[in-house]
Length: 139
Image (cartoon, rainbow, N blue to C red; front, side):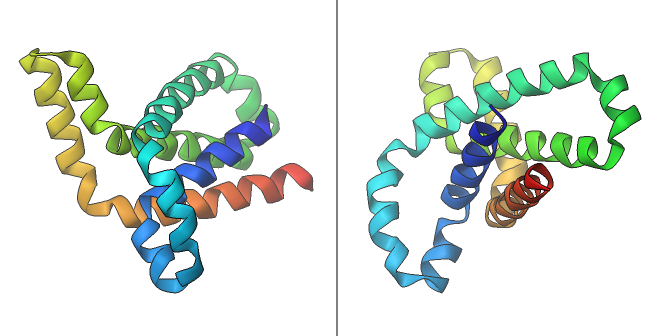
C-alpha cells in the first residue's frame, strides 16, 4: 500500500509541475498529452486517498512519532502535499459536484487562489518527497 502512496504522490507532483518537466525533458510532452485529460480525476482520487491516509495516520500518530519521528514528519508533509495538489487539480470537478452551493465554491476558490501560484513548486516538492519516501522505504 505504501508504494501506491509513492506512485500517487509522484504522479500528482508530475502533473502539478508538468510545465517545468516539459521544459527540462522535451520527450515527456507525449506522456503528459496522454495523462492531462485525466488530471482532474487523478487530483480528486489523490485528494480522497490523502485525506484517508492522513486520518489513518492521526490514529497511530503517537506510536509513529515515538519510533520513527523523522519518517513520520516526512510522511505527514507528503500527505499534505498530496491533499493540496489533489485539491488544485480537482478544482473544476469539485465545483461541478457542488452544484450551486456558494459556500463550497467560495471555499474551493479561497484554497485554490492561495496555493495556485505555488503549484509548480509544490509539484516539485511532491516529487522530491516521493523519492525521499521511496528511499526511506527501501533502506
